[in-house]
Image 1 (cartoon, rainbow, N blue to C red):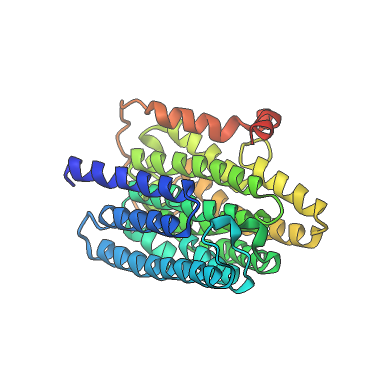
Image 2 (cartoon, rainbow, N blue to C red; image 1 turned 90 degrees about the vertical axis):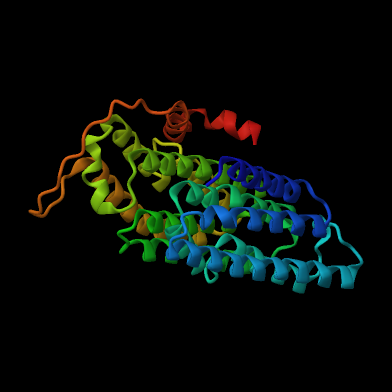
Length: 346
């Protein structure tokens, strides 16, 4: 793609995200969401492959439907209360429609079917944008309206998302699909706590975005899309593969690593809110996704292919790892000891 066009689309993405996050009026928030959707479409379909065109079409249709529902919920609220302010969404029907719209935007179960397909049809860099920056405006809208959302509905969506995100990721061989189901599972953790402690949702999102960015950038460096090619990619940059192993375990939420922090805080907050059964259930369901993270980690560093087909070893490259990946990897692994400081900032 033309670098100038690429720059315009990236700037439009940042502009749309900024407009939605900083707006008070529903129409401005909707405008930001639309700018975002239109800016990402060329980035999804830039390879001109039929799969990419299909992904862009699916993304456009889903996001258009979700944007229409956002507009509909805000109009219903304005009709009943006379308020267009985002924080004044008080009508129960409006908040119900908005929750459905945001769930569709984010890819929460039962509106999740588009997300793995779109991620599979996109290049890795676009997949990174779809998994991180494109999730920020809808989460910001949830954050601003969190006081008027229905806790039972969100808890149900969250538990279903964690269950299906873990379950459907078990049998995948395409890494982008595994990361899509991982994203759905993490969104479940964010959705369950948004009503009780919205700041924890934001902290969870920031840490998730950081770890996902590390994984996508690493995969982009070693040019890997499938589990079978991941098995032989360790010869390219062994040190980077070792770091990928730790980042995957961090994303799974294992204790000494950064990814344990949001899970620990969310379970603690749910217990304080007398929701110990929900906390137990969501913790058990996250074991499903732990399985496929371990599978990815196993393929990354520990094993050679278990079958007898001759795989050509790839040449070790002398290319140095980018500073960005080095910084992100370090943060994805080592932030747990400074969690008290992180909590004072948040």
